[in-house]
Image 1: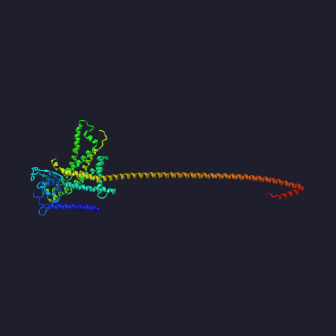
Image 2: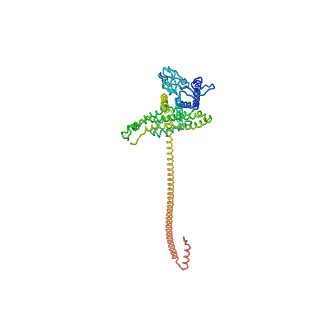
Image 3: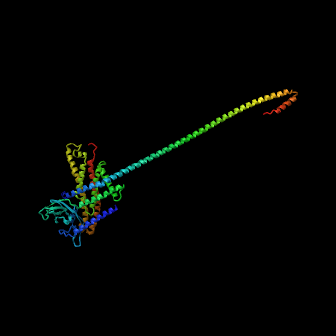
Length: 378
Length: 166
């Protein structure tokens, strides 16, 4: 086991190092970025842009940027594959072909089609267009978005955390074959599993049905929590702040509670007993909207908004270092920024858990409402 | 709302749906099912063990109570037996004494009776002998023609000397 652990660690380091050097090698010889100063962030508007850019999904995995002694801007990271479903079918290439350009100046030609990246979205240029022309709201007029199945940074995050969770918990599962009480890191995981089962699944769904849904709730809980936490590291993942991901999770919950709803649940939703017949259709509409739209929408927006807000606040506080440099001096601005972002980071660590807990709790609650057995007559 | 919709990437949605479905399926199969089963097994094992311990404790208590009771009974029985035995021996001794007394008194009575008888017999014999003797003396006295009173007396004396009273 020890050898296996060491091998895994070693491989991780090798892979990371390889990617970094590959990325480094790829980026250092490009002399692009003539249009701007290579993404240096100094002013308020640049900070705002940077934060907004960070909140979006990214097509390459950048770790950091620096300016070399020759005054050249260099980005360290690694490119990720771009997979598009364009008007001409499937198109794939590496994101390094965009050379970190995000405003549509770099045009990548593949399969006779021209692609540009504008604000982290890949657009397909119209046939006759040579360059992107945009209106005053920065929307491209001669290009349209394509279906983008790229392995983006968020997808990398999902894959990474997915494998991590599988690795951790399958090891915990394996440990039970030989011993009653797990040892090592699995011992930390066991109480968390018990917590989700006993504090979230059991009380909200009920002793009778909870077993069927615990697997989903556990997966969602650990997925959201670990991704929230990873989002706080300098790796800069913002997976749970992607509305597509939270929507996906919310829709899973919706599907589960809609399809496991029993007769009582549907009866109460569509033809509420104990209410004057005239009101029943009105109530049905309200109930249906509540169950099919408001519930999942509240789930997806809550998670998305909380995590996005956390990232915005932390990055803004870090940006105090630059924005208040003039009024407070370098030391003052840096000190203030470090103190404030430190405390906000602590709060965000709490929020990371809290949001995972709330999402799982509400999912369990909704499922519990759908499978609850009403014994009392209304 | 517009930015929200603009930020929504259908591609990422599709990819994350597929990945999450796979993740949930894999986690349920390789992690949650065995983990939850083992946890449940362990919990039932623990509660069974606790119940068994409680049962054992109760049984032990019962056993102890039984033992105590048996001991008490045995002690009582022993006491009773001892009492009985003492009683029996006492009565036996008393009876034996009574018997002995009876036997001795009977013996003494018998002895007295036989002594009386012997005495009667002896007296009768003595009487008979005395009578015979008297008759003999009288005979002799008469035979010798008693000349003088002095002779008679001498003779009586002589005969009496001969007579040994036994």
